[in-house]
Amino acid sequence: LPASGRPDPAAAPTPGATADGILRRQRARESSARTYARSFPIVPARAKGMTIEGTDGRRYLDCLSGAGTLALGHNHPVVLEAIQRTVESGAPLHVLDLATPEKDDFTDALFATLPKAFADRARIHFCGPAGTDAVEAALKLMQTATGRRGVLAFTGAYHGMTAGALSATGSVAIRERVAGGAAEVTRLPYPYPYRCPFGVGGERGAELAATYTERLLDDPSGGVVPPAAMILEAVQGEGGAVPAPDGWLREMRRITGERRIPLIVDEVQTGVGRTGAFWAVEHSGIVPDAMVMSKAIGGSLPLAVIVYDQDYDGWLPGAHTGTFRGNTLAMATGAATLRYVAAEGLAERAAVVGARMSARLEGLRSELPVIGDVRGRGLMIGVEIVDPEGELDSCGAHPVAPEAAERVRSACLERGLIVELGGRFGSTVRLLPPLVITDEQAEAVLERLADAIAEVSGQRGRRS
Image (cartoon, rainbow, N blue to C red):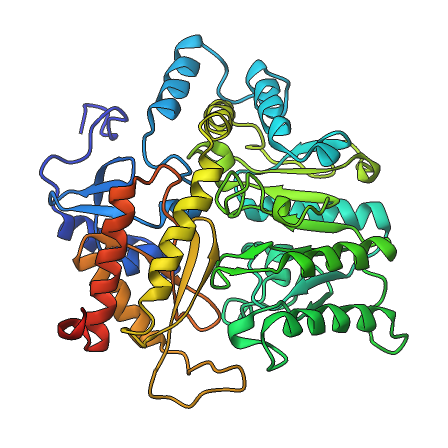
């Protein structure tokens, strides 16, 4: 320590600190709520593109990408240049919600990516730095505008961990120990062909989900008072990379529009090219009343906003604030990332590479029967791990196998591949590689994942 007895804020990390020592101190000092650190007992020291290098020198292909945050991978030159340029310019790094050139430029860059029919009537609100705060803001906005309280949300949904967002989230495990909620939520069925809530699957399952929603809302004894909003994901991320059929999304837009129910689309994980379109709503052509955005829009730094139709802008000053609702560096890196993704056609590339990877994984199902389902959109891919010896359900799905999925994740890590699990039962291996993934890296991901699944399922020596 210096003479003051206080740590030197400029000091580098402890030289020679071992991964085991760092992980041991983390376990001793951090909360029990830590998550990724449990799944991946590594200590990243350097990262570039899709590659992470640990303190022990081992390298990993990162198919988690900050849960979809790193559209351009780690430390992309475009992002680093934006940081350096902004810091050297002397721009204020924190000014609450005052106007700055960086904020104005970010807003221009963001609006240029939006569907024109939405952008022409859009207002933007900068929220706290996480997607969950943007969800809170969107719900409050619509409750204010409509004078109603209730929310329509879906099975399998994930919208965040704060009170209102958690109420709209479907997972019972993360909600059951938290008393109360910030909103009265009506839970609706989300189309999930492999494990259809109606037991029929396919297009018919989506049709029934839409019919159920419409009839429930119109039933005077259905128990649903006029809601303040419907919130949904065009592709459920934490729910297991489950894409909503475009026709179903159009039905949700029709149903809400006819009943004057604002439609909020949560694009926190699906945005900025992830699904093969810049925004996932573009696949269906719907125009929502509000979009929730975070993760990739900050170019790897914390940033969250809601963009919404001007007709709902009924807030009073200070109705939703937060100290860190303006982050100059994140706005600079976000604008640079948005423009780079658009200029380089990375959304289109995500569609092509994602389709190729999904097709390869689908082709493995015959030789690796623990792969029950392959689904997703673009570079948002889910591989559901099942017990192939278990009894089939009415949709032809085998029972889930979460323990096997955990072993697959561990086997992937041993092979230098970082993947995470998700889905209703924690049985889906999720792939969220950066949009800049090369063909060679995509091939390596597929080979390592297939080898890991084969080992766990006892099929390793039988693969052709």
